[in-house]
Image (cartoon, rainbow, N blue to C red; front, side, top):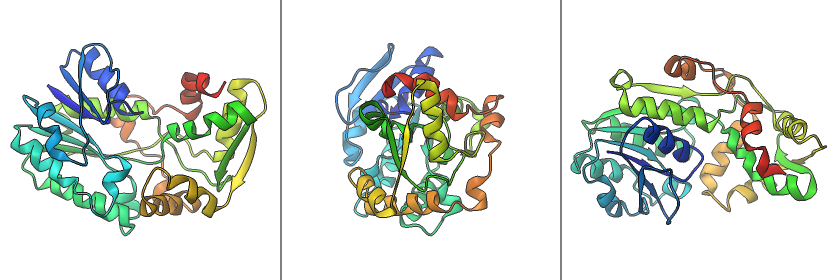
Length: 279
């Protein structure tokens, strides 16, 4: 049995599907009741209260650990989940971490995530750590404004990073959960090209066949929007990166291709698969 947390999200859903299609038994965990791919069982649990995860971990051999925004808050104790997994007999944990742990190690949210990484390394379990950069699926935040106003609003319109397709993250996670060659691996996951928010808007417009205007937000406007969903510290750390990415954050990582044997998917591929949400 493999337990997938965040199983209804942009990474967890394709990961659950990939594992079930490969014949693995999967327990899909999310905070609320939800439909999951055929062949998986669903358990509702809130990772902010790790004890609630105990039923999902019973009989599990591996855990995919994705920490939601509230688990980056100062009072959260996400490392407790690793201890619970070990106590439950889980033998392997694949952690979805962040590129910023290496590229911005002093950011408050990065310090907290590094502590989780360290707890995993010291747990005695087999492990792998995935460190993605920006997600292509962040563009889903523009879907309503594109549908209703034909507009994308974002900060730092002409500053780009190599955003990664969540489907690629899911495939790397699936490999790391079942293949012993990835034990002890730390994988930086990026897309194949640097792309700016303005270029992303143009890509969406091309796929729609209709114009999409770009409106540049100030940093304060962007932070106000982000803090509706994540702690202020995480919003600031993210905005620091997308405002002025350093050379490490602009680097195209070879790790997706190293694990999967193919190049990472470009942003226009993600748009083509998700264009219906923008119509």
